[in-house]
Image 1 (cartoon, one colour):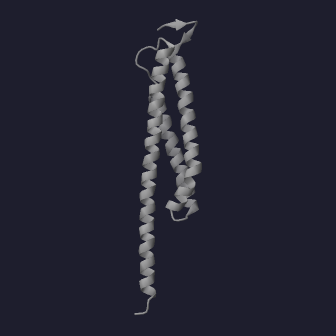
Image 2 (cartoon, helix red, strand yellow):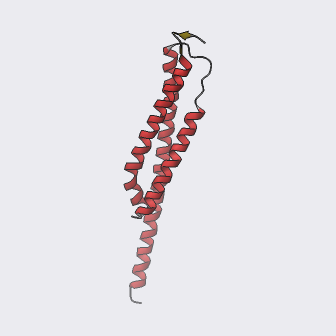
Image 3 (cartoon, rainbow, N blue to C red):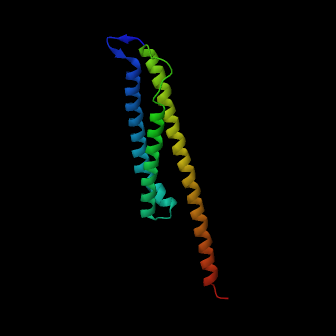
Amino acid sequence: MKYEQGLDYTVMLYLVYVALSLGLAIWVGRTLFRNGRVFLVDAFGGREALADSINHLLLVGFYLINIGYISFALTSQGYIESWRELLEVLSHKIGLVAIILGVLHVGNVYVFRKIHQHEKRLKEQLDRLEQSLSQPQ
């Protein structure tokens, strides 16, 4: 392991990686939480309490998955011996975090789109049933 004026590049990598990854996860989580509410209220047929509860649970799960992955990936193969190596490893690690965040987001949108479609079909079926029951025989 090389030191330059007492600097350990591996420790520097870990500190920068944790700071950037957690910052990215928190920013994305807050953005999704704030902007996803309207989508969830619509997906759950206007039931705001249910949408808010689901939104909060999604945020907690989102943070747990990301903190778990960030912690799990807090290793490096070998020693980091230069700023160039530090930046290469850091970009790889941050890139993986960003990909995971994107996949989780797209997965959530897909699931809630399916829920919304199901809710819409149920409402249409109920409307048709009500109409048929209200028509005189």
